[in-house]
Image (cartoon, rainbow, N blue to C red; front, side):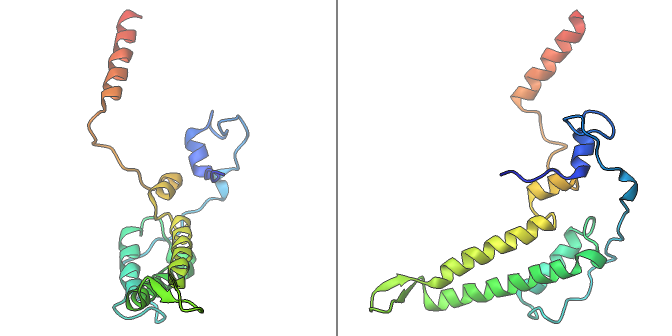
Length: 171
């Protein structure tokens, strides 16, 4: 099931000001307020491994996503995300040490249970990344970043442009 569109996106693509694409009233924008952004990179929380994957992610998040992340409201989620990165790195190290197969209870080889745990953990990290607007789709839904701008026109864009200009000349 597709996710719900944020109200901000509905405002931009709606039928009229204050209406969504189906003509329904949107909630008023009067209760929306700008949250103060980060002034630089906040100090790394002590729960993160010094020099680890979580600390590196912390630095990167606050440098690259400072335009839409607010330390006052997003701090705890970002701490959990970075702690999850540290845990993921530990799981990958353990998997590298033990290998992809382990000995089962009857002496048979079986897939390492860490593989499934790592997949579940990666899904949880992805959920937190989406929540913070750190995936391309999430940034687009929030309206904080889109790829494009200076891309060359595709052949279809060029055909549509020519058709539109012919329509203006004949009309």
